[in-house]
Length: 179
Figure 1 (tube, rainbow, N blue to C red):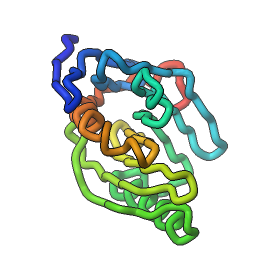
Figure 2: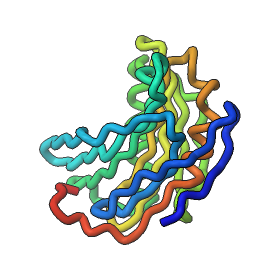
Figure 3: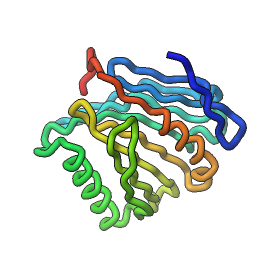
C-alpha cells in the first residue's frame, strides 16, 4: 500500500501508515508520532480491543493521544449503527447527568465510507477534552478516540481530523484476537 501524503497545519505530513489486517484497519499519521500496540483489554460481557494509540513523540505527546478500538457488545440487543449510536449517546448522557462530562457536540459524520457519529466532550475533573468518532462495520463498533489535555486540543485537532479522513476499514480476519 502506498502512503498518500497529506500536509497538516504544522508543516508535517501524514507520511506513515499504521495497518492491522487482523482488524482490517489502516490510518495515516505523521512520522514524528509514535505508536503503541500493547493495549488489549477484556471486560466480562464486552470485548474491547484497544488496537493502537498514536501520539506526538514529544513532551506534549502524553497529553494528545489518538486511539483506535474495536468493540463487540455481546449483551446489546441491537448491534446496528442505530443501536450502537443510541447506546453511546445514552452512556455519555449518563456521565453528563452525573457531572463527569460536559458534551459540546453530537453530530453525524462519516468515516471509512460508513455513517458515523462524532461526540466532543470535556471531562470536567480531568481538564481534558475528547472526541470520539464511531461507526459499525463487520458486526463491530470501530471507534477513533482523540484524548487531549484541554490546553493542547486545538493545537493537534487539524492533524487528528486529517488522520481520521485517512482511516480505512477492510474485511478483517479477526484471527487470534478477541473481538
